[in-house]
Image (cartoon, rainbow, N blue to C red; front, side):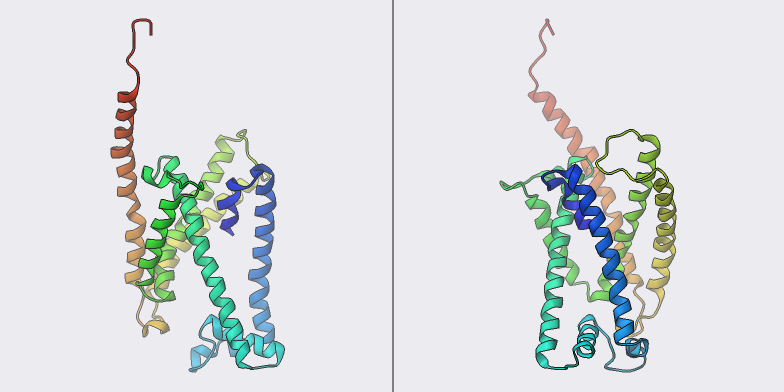
Length: 271
């Protein structure tokens, strides 16, 4: 759903399109993430969904649970149905990867413009696309694949992903309190700033306590081993932003300022 926010600035009329895109995306996400689990429970049943806990051959992965759902829904177990579900899931994963590369690249590009990331990430190609940032994301995605399967990737990536919600929500509260008159294309009712603050507290508890607890539990997909090492890797990736930010503000910015002063015309007596 954050994809809608990433690309609003590239719309023809961002002030008009932002409200439409965010509202429709939110409603669509609420519908999908509510109806899919309800549909599974109604069609497949809770005992069958929980079969993977007690037996081999249960609904272990997404492909299997969707195939089982389709078989019960259409009353068929033909091979072509398995292949169709697999193709659809692979397509969805490819779109998800593409979106993460494109959306994150625009975030890095904006961070560079705002003075929070190295200047090279603000560069764009002749099409106006942040090509360097996208290439950087591709390399990071390839490295992420080598860390393991879904359990390992989710564990390490959620350290940074979930913590990102906290400063965004706190920032929303501070802006609405201290910059209430600032021009905004979308303006929610005033009481939403308190909802944002409450959500930030909730996310902080989930992130600080829930993360380490979940990582300490034995995982069936890892031979009942825990995922604390991947939780630690996630923290290392998160903290690595500090030297990157330090390089920008302590090395690049002073150098850029000196170069700007050197290029400026000399002052005359009349100046």
